[in-house]
Image (cartoon, rainbow, N blue to C red; front, top):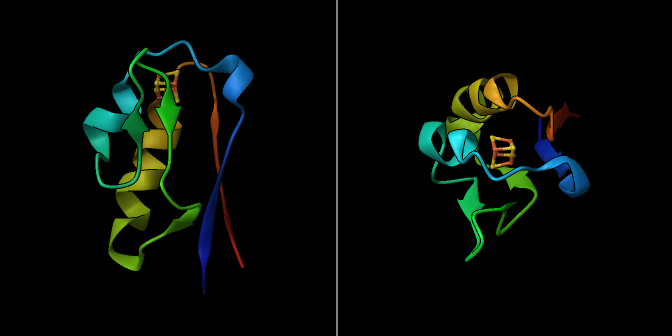
Length: 66
Ligand code: SF4
C-alpha cells in the first residue's frame, strides 16, 4: 500500500503545525507555507502524517492510500 499526500495550497495559512507534528514529510518554505519533497509518505510516517493532516486548521492536507 502506498500513501500519497495532496496539499490544497491556496488554503495554507502557514501555521506550521503540520511541520511540528511530522517534520520529515511536511516542510515550510521561507514564508512559512507548507510543501513536501515527495508526495509519497514513507511507511513509518503515515500515522504522524495523518495526525498532522487532522491537526491542520485549514484542512490543507489530504492523504490517500491505495
Ligand atoms: S498546518 Fe495546515 S495551514 Fe498550517 S502550515 Fe501546515 S498545511 Fe499550512
